[in-house]
Image 1 (cartoon, helix red, strand yellow):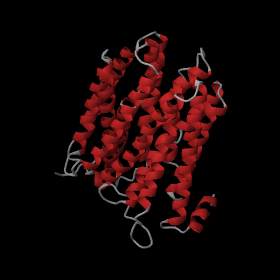
Image 2 (cartoon, rainbow, N blue to C red):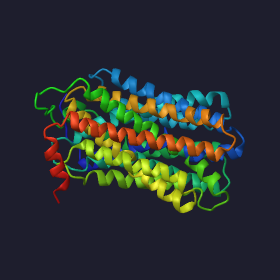
Image 3 (tube, helix red, strand yellow):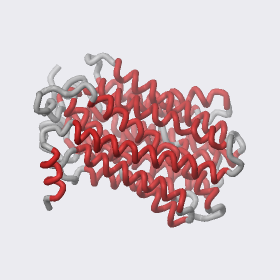
Image 4 (cartoon, rainbow, N blue to C red):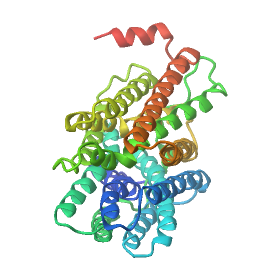
Length: 408
């Protein structure tokens, strides 16, 4: 099979759109629709947590499945399959069959993870060797999907539409976008392992065995650190400023900030260790999560949404590129591993909230405690990266890394 080059901008647009569907709809459409479903009386916070957990468990299963997909499989076929699956599963959520929703959200999570891994790998492969520096723009997709779904849900809430209608609208929009980008994911493309940022450049030429587990652990903490905000932000806002006309603004603001963060990620210094970028991103997100505890008015929630959203997809961009440097082959397998560990962190979020809520009398106090724990998790993750920089300095010594930071 001969390889053919794609227009870099077409690849970026298609990749971003695919991730918008996989992540913005497959994973996160539930967040802005949740208040609508609560208003409709079709579920409560406990069942909402169950649906969220089912989606995150599916995301874990999908990440593990991505690790097992044979390398000879056409990755574009997998991407197209995830697009179709997400459209269908989203549409089925409109059916008034509550006992089936858990299964549907689980399967949507599977499709989301597989779509994320294979879309990211395929797009980065097509951009390799083109001299293009716009690879991070692919990761604007999740943020754009979140922002678009949030704005759409705001409009539907204003019109008094039901949650079931919202699911159908999101399915229809996903179908239209999938049709537009369908041809870009064609055959005769570069295999996903064609993209690499090089083999490990450790002084010994080998990657220490303990580096990958530490890196995966830190990435998993990011999954737990942001997920409580990402799942319950509209509900937290509703409890904090009931009746405010700004209630539906915070989730789209989170998505817009994620888009901005992805674009900024492409402009950071390439001289510094990527783990330094990850450390800064984690600390920024930790501050954002903590702000929603101590600053509970509209301005505080807006600032919190921005600070949590800015590093959201930038963290994935930095981590996936670091994996490609550490592991120069079998990229999808190791990207799947990272995504699986991230999913484990996510899975822990809703049950943690449920356990806390069962032991406190006040809902706001329960959310405050859960968010405080999430913020601490992000700080711990940042500390792990600092430890890794000291233990595994890479191609530059710690002194040179510090010099790179200080250099204007």
